[in-house]
Image (cartoon, rainbow, N blue to C red; front, side, top):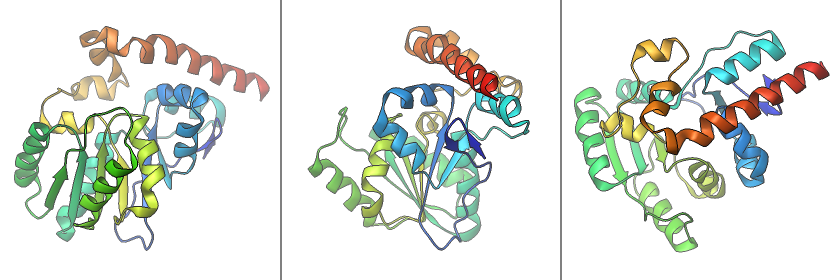
Length: 235
């Protein structure tokens, strides 16, 4: 489905697919960031699968396309891929986050998905990776050649890095899942199913961290609504 210039797919990647797949998500905030950041927009447009992560995207599809689609968050993508890996005895790499967070991910994944071989690497903490950093990160991933590479370095940094280095990464599926690392490790609590089912997952997070999430919820959301309304008027 083409929505506001992006080809969005409401489906999960398959580990049995013959070619490498890059999977990203889009929500109202990332849409607005991409309007100002051409490199980020190129990264999203180049996705093999771009998932609708956010009630705003779901509502936009209904308003502009008269289509009912299901929100698929990064956490949903993560759970789906880990289940596939567990059924096939596959391998994954978690690239991103602090060593302490990765250790917690290892412990939980070993209990939840005992058939999955889990590896990880914590890259340098810096806003931009240089060529040497990226070479090391790719080498760490390729030493395992995983079925799935989970990248968690916050948007838009993670999507840009994957787009720049896709050709050098030996992985069947590469998914940028950001905050999922912290959610799964338990270092950040994900809102309950009650809020998720209401399409208000963003609200408890905003109330907990209003300063950090102010731009996302108080600036990007109105901008996105305006974009949708303008498109509707054109139609």
